[in-house]
Amino acid sequence: MSYVLETGYLVAAVLLILGLRGMSSPRTAHRGLTWVGIGMVVAVLVTFIRTGAGNIGLMLTALVIGGVLAAVYGRQVPMTAMPQGVALFNGMGGGAAGAIAAVELVGGAAVGGAPLVLGVLGALIGTVSFAGSGVAFGKLQGWMRRPVRFPAMPMVNGAVALAAVALGFAVIAGAQMDPVLAAYFAAAVALGILVTLPIGGADMPVVISLYNAATGLAVAFEGYLLNNPAMVIAGTVVGAAGTLLTLLMAKAMHRSVLQVVGAGFRAPEAAAEATESGGILKGTEPVDAAIQLGYARKVIIVPGYGMAVAQAQHKVWELVQRLRERGVEVRFAIHPVAGRMPGHMNVLLAEAGVPYDMVADLESVNPEFARADVALVIGANDVVNPSARDVPDSPIYGMPILNVDEADNAIVIKRGGGQGFSGVENPLFTADNTRILFRDALDGASELVQALKQV
Image 1 (cartoon, helix red, strand yellow):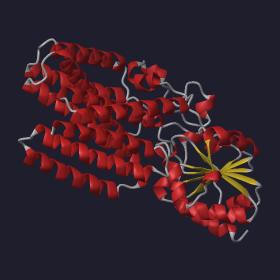
Image 2 (cartoon, helix red, strand yellow; image 1 turned 180 degrees about the horizontal axis):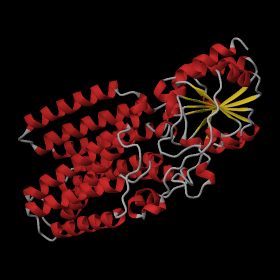
Image 3 (cartoon, rainbow, N blue to C red; image 1 turned 90 degrees about the vertical axis):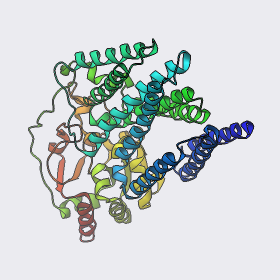
Image 4 (cartoon, rainbow, N blue to C red; image 1 turned 45 degrees about the vertical axis):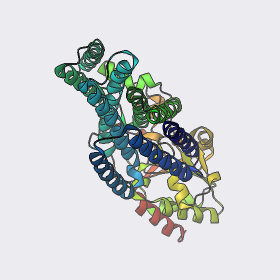
């Protein structure tokens, strides 16, 4: 029986690895998810048989409740809310790892040696990920619009981090009394919250990926504590994949991971407050914008979160088709975090039928803006903000942007004034060659389509 069970864990591990490999491409992502799902089912079944669980009724109840809630949420959540959905489910994973560690430590099952050390580490990492992911969810959901800072934050964060480390050593040394353990988990929760609060919205994708990697690592550690190969393998694979993704995303944003997570350990002066641009927004009407677009030689379209929220991708593709019928060269420019998550905007455009060869990433398309007659920005803000390139004391300085300001003309579809997710004013919107079409993304694209028919 032992041989059969270990073989089951091996099968589950292979399925998880194949699934992650499949999710590396949009064409095979669905198949990859299927493999991962099957692998998790196999791992759960083997674990049930292997442990001879006495609380099987409670566990089955929890599985049913969790499965139903996840299925309902997964079917109802819109694509625009997927980033916060990822943060939410990732936080649940970290919380589960922390809860496992709490049960084992309180019950005294983790006694000495490597299992105890890894259990304590997993508790810290999982709990920090749980609390930090909750804050990230709140930021992406729009409940916290600005980074939260206070003058003594670096000292407070440093003290909380030192307290968490000291309490962790105390637990490892044998001080596994309930008050010490409670203080340890409280410090971990506080650390997760305080580290995430000052991080700006533009860095949220990196933060989510980092916490995803942390959750995987915590699960692997707790798997070692429980002597559960499936948890060790799955956690290690998720942790490794998440770490690679985090490093790649940070590099794409011209950030280091330490710069992102260290925001709460720097003095508040390190990040400037948002300033008013002092310019005037100059409006335009659909017919005037359609004339500019219809008689242009080259148009670059920059879709953003506003387009995703309005579900305007189909109407935007119709607009592009009308322009191409008139002989206009059109390309889409995609920022690495357009839509607040890598690949989000590509999925929306593919859903509307936009060919892959019309979609370009930041590095390949940026040189083309200087040769574009019109850059059409639809619901994007921070990713086209020249302050990130030109203003050293801007909170988003150093973040790569799409060089829309280098185009001969810019047309921006937005509902009104206002700042981006980072809370920074955008001087592009008040530039001399920029006109604002004050519309919702869907209404703006629809009216441009109709206006083009009259041009």
